Image (cartoon, rainbow, N blue to C red; front, side, top):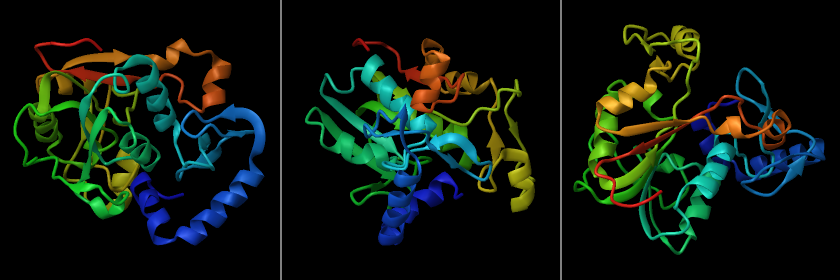
Length: 260
């Protein structure tokens, strides 16, 4: 299977082939054992995904992954994003979220990435290492599975902290290797095969460990590591297609001036 970034390109470049493939997968996985909160579809399981063929991972309807479905439910159940007016910066906007956020009347939505053509039309150009915007202008920032591609990840974190309003919040997810207490990075590894061996994908430059929250705190964020999947039973984790033990990294900028 393709990397998550390559997957973003499939729809716009090969729309007919992609729709045929999705239609076939919807037939193949027809059933009622799993439920996608992003699109409301039901299947006997989610399709496998990635080079490791992760089981119960990929929704054949909306193409959401485990992390997308977890974030969808977290946003609905534990944040104010749909209940208050918010100015919202979304880096590397996941296709499954794009139209959903765009149609919310309370959300002033800024989807952006350094490679906007890889994302839905309307995505703006932003270099997360040098965001050409004033300080303190966004109520919400979401940036998922981006930092592992960037050598100077702390600069990117600082830029997102800078444009977030005092009292605003951010969700900043990365893949975590829970066997590592300390993040592993080695910029001397440049061979794609060696990078894949070291970091999981050839495009990645590090594997984050359990110290990820501390890296965020060093840039100024108050960080809550919310073990959200712990609130679901084993059956529910399968039903929604989550990773057991997957945490949400919920970050705030002091001073706190409004409630979650």
